[in-house]
Length: 279
Image 1 (tube, helix red, strand yellow):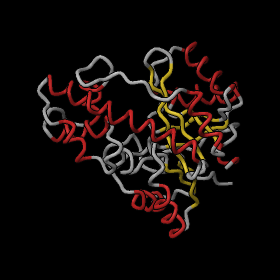
Image 2 (cartoon, one colour):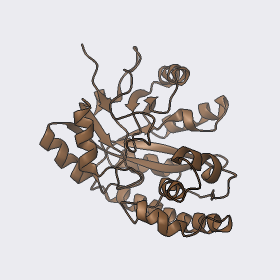
Image 3 (cartoon, one colour):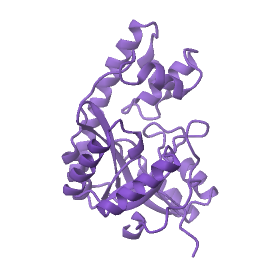
Image 4 (cartoon, one colour):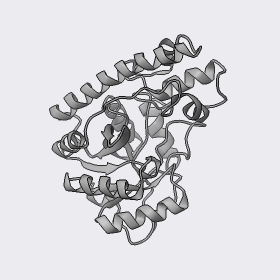
């Protein structure tokens, strides 16, 4: 039987994507995606538009979110919530708290960039943000490229916005306990996003997975747009070891700015239980 073309992690202009929710859904449908989750950062505002468009084009849709959490020694980890109830009060209040923290961080980032000659960064980032309540590092990166300080967004993160660089600002996000409580309380399935991107040793990663599972976490992105072949093999092994559901996700942000397009990932390795069997 042909594997399901599921893409369970992507972003719209409601967070740091380049396409409005409706256009994102239409692109996914054109690419052959059969099951799509919109998972904007700390934000549910694009779900109604995305779902309406999915209904219009005949694409099965999952309400999702990607929550930023602080873990260990100044490590930011992202937890995807799939099939959450957008009307859940505790989830909405929790995400609002995180967005308030994002705005304060954006102001501090702009001040740090101003010190090294990148002026007007907050206003510039805001112009790139489809949602003025959520100004992220990606919006700053696009402004810095626009101003000619870097050739592309990836270079901005490498030289300006990563830890230890001029525009980096430490920030306390939600806790893992918060994120799991909100997602599970809203009827969702919690999935660790792109685990290959975190600066964690094997032991630290194992600890994260263990605590995540103990708190009710159920899935891991085995396939992510940023994962290399060896990472796919490693996280397939982790999924089997912990009994995690396996997710397939592009983490698409926009044309020309993402590792891979919507729905263009390889199939999940055999022997894993896809997370969509529980959706």
